[in-house]
Image 1 (cartoon, rainbow, N blue to C red):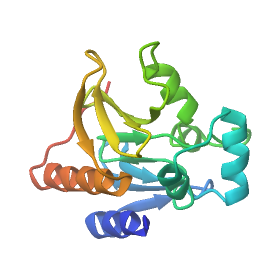
Image 2: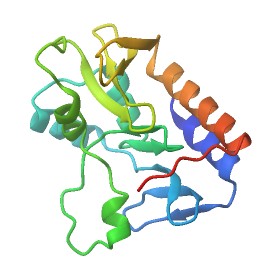
Image 3: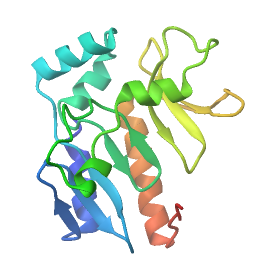
Length: 181
């Protein structure tokens, strides 16, 4: 279901990629960094162990996404969490920095007392100053970090990712890139 993402990314960046020993593939070399990266999938057993460690049952759409990619970073627009590496021992700085951000860390940044219990926080955007949740119906909601108000909603995780890819393509076509210090 989510294999389209890698196909889209490869079409956009062509041969402009680098595969790390961790099997993360980075795309779109900018001056001193990469624009997008996809982390390798998790097995069903790894997803179950991950859920057990986090202490919640993940939404089915998120579990399915993890079976394709253990999180991703798309066009500087989206950082989707997954299961962090077991160890950083022996990894280069690049492999460490480009590893999966743990979904628990993303939740820790954005979870508040007023966050509805049925909201599963799974991603954020530094550029947009937003974070993303799945509600009990697995709709994806874009939430403003400051006001905590829902800005946008998407019927499915796939619809949401398709929108991010389109926005990324538009930014590339218009040569819109973000600077991070």
